[in-house]
Length: 241
Image 1 (cartoon, rainbow, N blue to C red):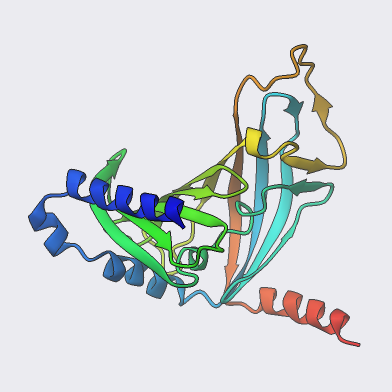
Image 2: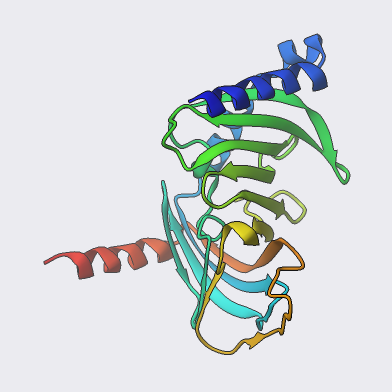
């Protein structure tokens, strides 16, 4: 309780430090996040063919191919033969996770990511049982999509995600690539693997780099074509007695 209160006041102080009083009056964090949520709602479901590249110091892993299915509001299925990834928060991410449950949103400032203007917003879940303690999102001013997300969690350390989009803006504005960075030290064995991989010797048995990265490249989307629905209907049918 005390820790969460401290984080809350830190966020408030940051807001005062980085934003002018005029900026704070003009920018409404809830409205900005609402536009992101509304834009994502037109995507009822999709199937995506992907490649997954994992980069950690102590294991060499070949690039894997897979398929991801999503159906509103929060159904995700990932198929990557011979490969599984932890923490799952990265592979299973959708914008809906940002808006799940009750939270306090605080507008911080405008900031450029390369040449892209973004709104920086801090999100504090109201539920103290939530795995996420504090999140920061960078929302594209023009496209109303999340360009970057950083979350501090109770058990998985700090997780960072960068979203890359193609041009021009499409009707279904989904990312072409996601770069997912997580804390290796908070995940003793971040990868559950079967199949072909090669261990890298480490005499000191210490991680030289405390971060692991996963790059998910989306090769092809099939949006609102019923492909994901059929997958989840099959799963539901198999679970039924």
